[in-house]
Length: 89
Image (cartoon, rainbow, N blue to C red; front, side):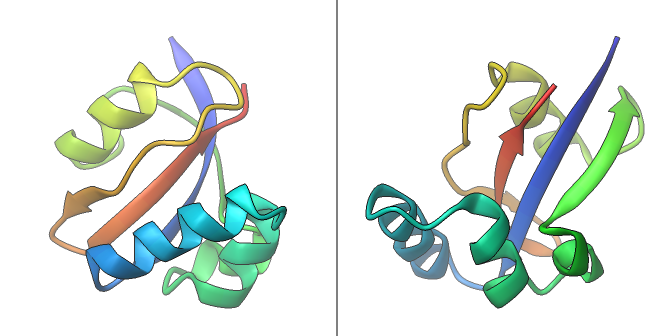
């Protein structure tokens, strides 16, 4: 099974919580990724494309595969920082 997802990578959990708040106020995931993500995928609105199991670090993968299409995760901690993940297919 493969999924498609976007993510936003920030250094602190409070930054991720703030971005969740901004989405609730009408900002799109892609806009926020372009403005705030620390990952090079920011140029594509956080788009990671399609991936299968075994391609991402375990905590990220577990969270991404648990999401429904168009659902956004809460903050997910990895060795890179805190991620918000949006599954889109």
